[in-house]
Image (tube, rainbow, N blue to C red; front, side, top):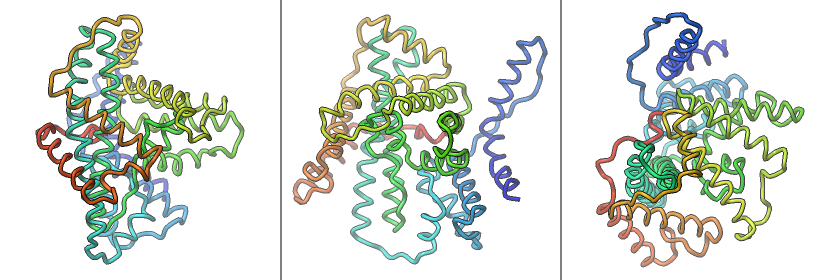
Length: 393
């Protein structure tokens, strides 16, 4: 019964998101063998946030099956848990044991929580409309015509995309968490300064934390986790990140991206490089730089429509240096915004109690920060921007 329920929960995701990919792949294989294929594709709109609420529903079924939580009897509370509106577009993915009790609790307006939520909304908006969307203009200009751009332009665009996808996704997550906090609901913090990771393993402890937790609890551990032979453990890691790649999208680029992340973590585990015990900046810095460069080039494969395009850009970076495509004046403000984010997160990573701005103990510092961020958003934000990157996942 449990297996049937989980399969039924996954069927809409497979049909809406992966049917055409599976159909095209089978058609390509048949064509290679000289067999004509006329299987019709689907031209349906994919429901918004289908991957997120599917994983949330499947996690609930697993938890009920393993008796981690009792089955929910109230249909309204269950639907609110699966489709809680701040997180439905792009997460975070919540567990039933964390979110359902909060939904059932009678809540009153809390001024301090509302203020904390508004601060998260403000910073999330800055990340999204100023940094991410402005950087996206430069990224699209280079990546959409990468054949005509130099290697250094492609390199700059790759760095810009790393910050774009972080600002886009982390910005949305902060706005979701902030909205939840205003309503008295605590959602999981989805990011913890991921570009300060000292390894790819560490990166997945900091990036999209709710997905990493979901994959660990419902894929990695059921496969055997680390309580097995080394070879089996490495296999479990690869399969887990294969699932991560498939979850991100119906394209071979996402599958290869996930497999490469899994393979790098296996290499780190073999070499004992998953952690760096020292908290000293100069000790961690080389590891941070190496990890960021690796993640950055993997994002290039993630971003491009085909593996060939992604690989060609990476090759071009190392073989055709050339001159960079100069950003216009407005795009320069996005690089300034990225620098502000880097400085802010460096302070949070290495000296969180000294350089707080939004939560500074001095009222004047806090309000100056609020006003400056609002001015930056109003003047430099791409306020007519399209959807969030992760809406399509």
